[in-house]
Amino acid sequence: MMGPGVRKGVLAAHLVASVGWLGAVGAFLPLAIVGLTSRDPQLVRGLYLSLELITRFVLVPLSIASLVTGIIQSLGTSWGLFRYWWVIAKLVLVIPATALLLLHTQPIYHLGSVAVTAGFAANDLVESRGQLVFDAAAALLVLLVVTLLSVYKPRGVTGYGKRKLLESRLDATAVVDQHRRAQRGRS
Amino acid sequence: MSEPAPPPVAPSDAGKRPRRESGIPRWVIVGGIVAAVVVVAIVVVHLAGGGLGGHFPMVGH
Image 1: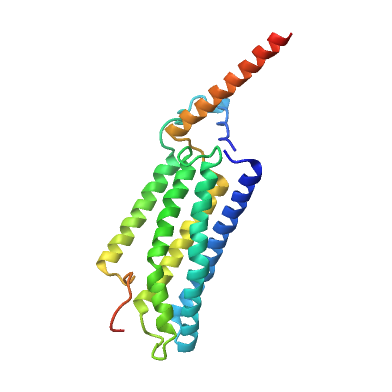
Image 2: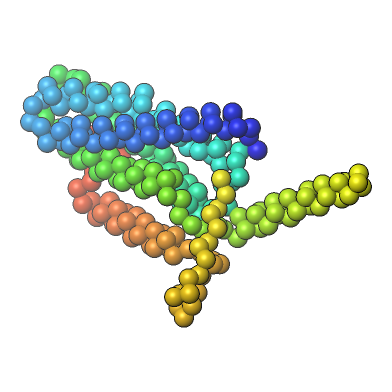
């Protein structure tokens, strides 16, 4: 288990990374929508260059940081990784979201590199641009659900979690018994 | 940071069916079904080529 100082540090890092990821996706979505619908080639070029930079320097680092700090936080505290259903639900949502983001970075980088070329027109690569809007909307939904899970922590302990809780209660009872015996021995 | 204790059973709840304390909670089952439906819908739309585009850069545009 982590000490209180380390635990708070990891929790702060996890909150910053997770909220930052949500905010970055929230900024990405309207830019991707305008990039898909605008007929102004200069605006479209600027937008896809911005989206490439946001993905490369904000989305990817924050998504990885959120996943890693979340796993460290779970393993280093009594929450554990597989003891509570809400922690498992978060993992089930965040791991594929991170994997899909990493998978979709190539089309985003490609759009960014094509957008800066002189021949790029406002109606080029429409399917890829539509994909970005869909992906960003889906990611936003997933991250909102993950945030709600973290805040509300819905009830539910797994079978493994119940065994661990029982073990820790038995350990605590053994410590109390030992303490009482020691007190009786002194008096 | 521990699981909150389950609420005590009120006298008015005495005749009702007891809450299921073991097994998978209902919200997990419902959430899993919703997630599975969404994933299947996305896969079907992708395979049907319903306008979401591919994952890889297109050639010839």
